[in-house]
Length: 303
Image: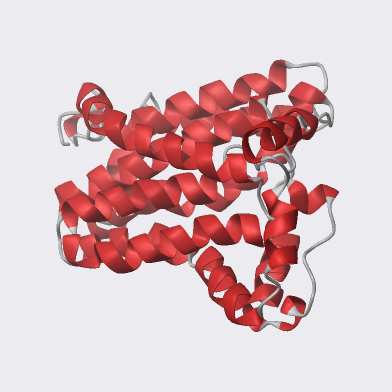
């Protein structure tokens, strides 16, 4: 028997449900790199996906390495295991534009979405709402709600974590990541740019608002092209609202109000088509319904 085996370092704890879900997403999204329009550095991205999958599934030699890290710094290892998925959201979001271009070579499906928008809404709400009501007293709260997306994502899990409500924290995180992954696969294999890339931003005086300007700066700094349909902003916020209603009902009203404002603000601000918001909300709600049974099916011994 090896020294590593004698020290119990050949195997760390089994993968959690979220680890297996994350690995499945990396495989499904990584398939995009097999398409002919992949970028010059596609091997590096593919290698990162493969290594991450091997780590997440605790395959040798990564199982021994993870066990060693856990033994040397148990609190840090536990915190990293609890939070890695949420903290990697920006990286996953950033690579979406590369992955969808690998599949479609810069083709986007806005024309189809615009036709559907006209069919269902009789026009383009992303262009008409702000033009009809260019009021800064309306614009600023809606843009603030749109920016609250980051608070909606991280706030409730952090509160659960600080209160040592481990089961609820993991259930919430699993649901959020399932919702993210469902949207992100749409962005990879059915990319839509959204009205922000095709139409001018709404003006009429609302452009002078602080939150209006901040929202546009944030999007200009970190928007991933092709990630409009369905709206992950709306879908994830709906999923979080429903998780809050289940685990922290006292917070449901403020989170729900922010979510409604975010959904309206996404269209009012010209960031999303109305159909993006509607189907994003539907997909988010669907993921909440699926998440508990899927988590049970994927859960490891320590869930």
